[in-house]
Image 1: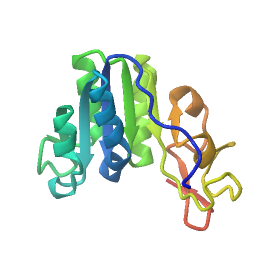
Image 2: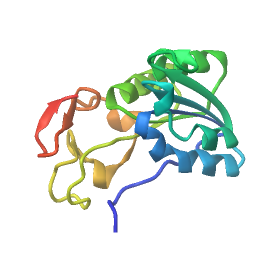
Image 3: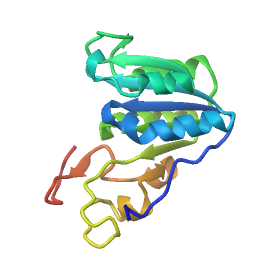
Image 4: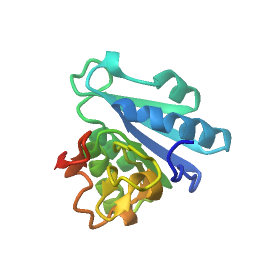
Amino acid sequence: RGPYGNVFRLQGEKVLAVGGGSGMASMIAAIESFAQQGARVVTAVGAKAANELLFVERANASGEVHIATDDGSRGFKGFVPALAEKLVEREKFDQLLTCGPERMMKAVVDLARRLRIPVQASLERYMKCGIGICDACSLDDQLVCVDGPIFTAEQLEGSEDFGHFRRDKSGRRVAA
């Protein structure tokens, strides 16, 4: 059995999924599922370089895909939250999903909060026990393995850890 926790939930008819690096692995099943349920899914995929992009073809089969690479080797040159901001300025979305480096997700959650768009962020933390005993995956007073891994903007509001601190392999709190 894996960690306890929750999953991405569809809210509305138009979804923007913002994934960075290996974070796309956590979102691709939701992207495909939401598209199968009839939602219009737009995906913004980010990576350091074109050769590090993940799940672009699968996301493309489920809807529109926009790409950002830090080095400009493919698509938008820059970070994926900047691309996401351009997309939400262009059209209205009922919901945002995000997973990737925590600083990236913090920027996406802040964007969603500012524009009052519901957002769900899948947090990545080391999970040693997966059942809420060891505290290695703590996020302030919550545990990612039990209370997450999906968190809303409301759950992350006021967090001292989100986007600023993470846990290393030993469980020690370190700068993100």
